[in-house]
Length: 160
Image 1 (tube, rainbow, N blue to C red):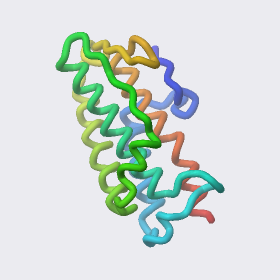
Image 2: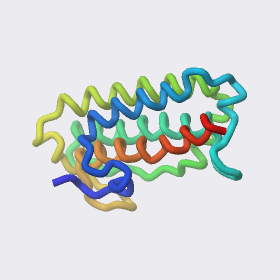
Image 3: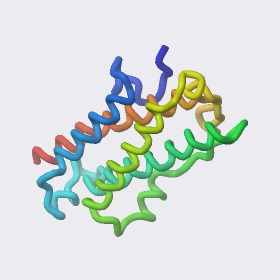
């Protein structure tokens, strides 16, 4: 049974690791012809720009991938929450193209790790201050759904 994450509706019944690969490819395809100015466009007033969304996705891959690795190697691992807005503010000079490259590389790195895990590995537990007890499998599903959640934003930016 698939774990329930904040992005379960976005993932639906898709297989998460295949979805990760597909989402990375889709986002790269959407951004393939963007100029530096295109990375600075938003999908709606007051929302993050394409560049900021890509930084956010790269940071999510970094944070969640690290949580999975720590859980797999540290018995009783307790994850730490992070403030996504504060993280974005710290990376304000990263270019859109570099953010896309970082997201794609980290996403693929995570997907390769996740594909190598046994079912027992995927059931490895950790705790989180907001979500409580979790598993590595939850992280896999969370990442996959989170990526899919943002694809419509990139599609809107491409159309505008």
